[in-house]
Image (cartoon, rainbow, N blue to C red; front, side, top):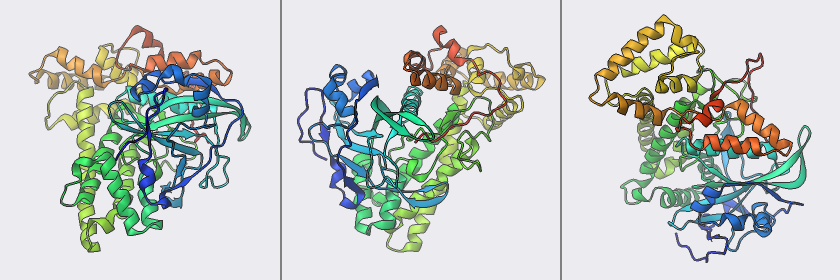
Length: 490
C-alpha cells in the first residue's frame, strides 16, 4: 500500500487503499451537509496519536469536516457494502448512515479508517434517514474510550458534533455525527457479501487485501487463506475472552458487527454487568437471549463458522477438503478462547502459574458470586484491595472455605504476595462505565450540560488507578424493580 498525499496543516494525511478493491464493495457518495455543526467533544489524545492538531480541529473549517459538510484533500467519500447474519438471519446491509472519509496515515506509519457516523443517506440506507442522535453517539464515545482504557481492542471516537438539526425517532432528538477511528471497517459481513454477491476473484481480492492490511506476516504462508482463518480465530477468541473478564455484554453480536481486525465495534445496546449472572441480557430487542453474557463465546464461534464458509473456495479446490481444513481450525476456537479466559481469570485472582485445580477454584468462586448476587466488578475490586466488607458474599461460610483454598493456592507460588497483588490490580478495574453513570451523563448532555460526561470520562481514563477520586464511580445504582434495558440507538 502506497501513500502519496501530502499532510495538511491540520495533519490530515489520507490514503484510500480500500477503493482499490472491486467497485462492488463500495459506493462513492456525496456529502450530506448539515445546518449548523457545533463541536461537543474532541479526543485530544487520539487526535495527537493520529498526527492531527487538536487546536486546528476546533476551528470552524475543521468542524465542518467532522460534520461531513466538507472533506479534507485526498478523501475517499465512500460507503462500504457488506452483509450479515442479524440474530441468525442473513441479509444484505452496508453503511446506511456512514461515510468513510479515508485512511489516516499516522506519523508512525500506521493506517486507520476515519468514518463519519450519522452523516446522511447512502445507497445502503434501506429507507432510513442516515442520521444519528446525540445520545447514542455520546454513548459510543464514552464506552469505546472506556474499553480502550481497559486494554480491550476497540474502535475509538475522535469527536462528536451536533448538527443543528432534529432527527425524528419516536420523538424529535438532537442530531449528531461521530467520527469513528478503526484499524479498518472490514467485517465478517464483508466476506459474506463477497461470497454471496461477488465472484471468486472478488473474494480473493478481499482476502488478499485483508492479509496485506492486517496480517502481512502470513503472506508467504503455504496456504495464506487458511492462515488468515487461523489468525481471525485467535483474534476473536482473545477479544471475547477480554469482554467476559470485565463483564462486558456487546448486545448485538451479528456477523456485520465482528471486525476482521479483532476490534470491538458498534456500541448500540451494549452494557456492563453489575450483579454477576451469566444469563444477563440488556438489549431490548434480544428477547430470546441469543447474545446473553454466557452466550458470547459460543456466538463468537458461530460467527467464525460463517466466515469460514465464505473462505471455502480459497482454502482448497476440493470442497470436501476445504471443509475439513476449516473444521479443523474451528475446533481450536473454544480451546483458544478458554485458554485466554483462564489466563485472565488467574490474573484476576493473582495466580501466576498453571495448576490443574485452578479452573475449579475459579468456577466455584463465580458460582458463589452468582448465588449471592455479588457485583462482578466490585467483588474483584474488593479482593484486590483486601476490603472484604459490605457484601453478603463475604459473610457467607462458603466464601470462607473458598478463601482458604485461594490463599493456599497463592502460598504455593514462588512469587511474593506483593507481586500477586500487583497482578490483581492490573487485571481488575476499579471502575467501569456503570450503566447508571452513563445514563446520567447522557441525560445531562441532552440538557446541554457536558460536565457530568467529562468527569465520567476522566474517571474511566485510568481504570486501574484505584484512586480516591474514582471511589464514587464504583457505587452501585439504587435498587429498582425495573431491569436495565439498552436500545440500538439509531
